[in-house]
Length: 79
Length: 141
Image 1 (cartoon, rainbow over the protein chains, first blue to last red):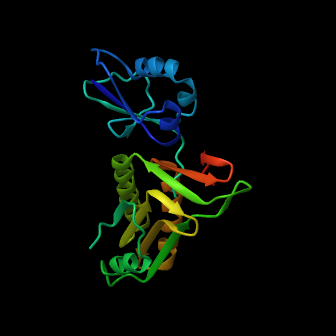
Image 2: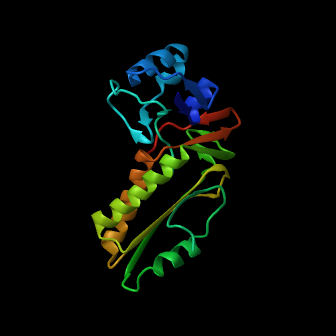
């Protein structure tokens, strides 16, 4: 299972803070982006950062592992 | 004593944070602080309150990394970072940073560097409540 989490403006666009996807051996971050991006284009339009297991990731070809946690995040605005 | 890096709903005391910082070393000759507050006006609109959301575990890990990097980069004796989450009313505290060093220059530079880096690297988002509705803030000037 892949746990996908959203916060702030992205969570508002998706109207959810968390969802789970079935894990398929060999699936990549790009596969998840393609699937969820098609379902939530507005949300993915404001995604600026992606983290896998709390580490920022830029390589969308990254192969995922079962039980990975992916966060799709808008530009930060703390402080 | 509270941890030097925290995310919390409750307000914080600057005096307590500075006292904790000072207790870490008697060699501290300069302490620089930054206090971020909730403004009642933004982008031409009145703001009544600000709500904060965060990727809590990652935000805390990143803030700890920032503190460690600042201590190393500027030769600090200690540093503290506290950020509030949840709803903050206008005029209330949002974030507090304190950097202590042997001399003023590294303390001031580190404090400036820490708030700039926090805004760019820590996964926290703010939403302003205005008479026109709620708006997520996307810039960090």
